[in-house]
Length: 186
Image 1: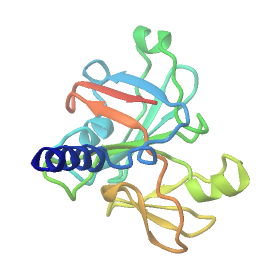
Image 2: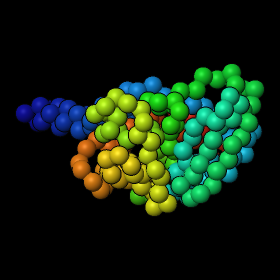
Image 3: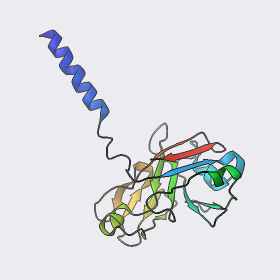
Image 4: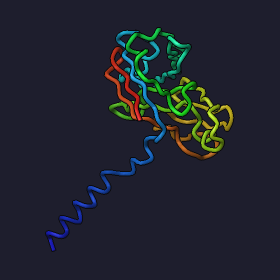
């Protein structure tokens, strides 16, 4: 009997440890690799700094030879693409033109690095139209001008104001630091 109890406890631990990660990350394609040591974007570096949680940066394309980085703290940069950047495939979320948002949340220790789609997930889900670009606020929230939902980017993108609904579309992301490499993939 003791032996069976051990196996039951072990199986329960395995199933509860795995959790439900199916819904944590999106199935939408996203691919962005950027080496900030070459471009030195201050707006992006501030969001890639684990010692400055709560700062988020929207990444979009700006013309054929530039990216646009805009932080929720008012910084913005428009670096020229390097030769390596020009050779890479870039896919910035559900709608390439509205981009993605990256940054460290300020609720966990150590801080969690997040990458979100810049579209309102609920408006996009209801219409399949990519025209619901979120507005970032200095407090680490993002708002939709259409449905008036407010999302907490520091806390996994959950809805904190307005009608209930889906949390922000999240992508796999990592960074090697402010002047290092940013990788957002799905």
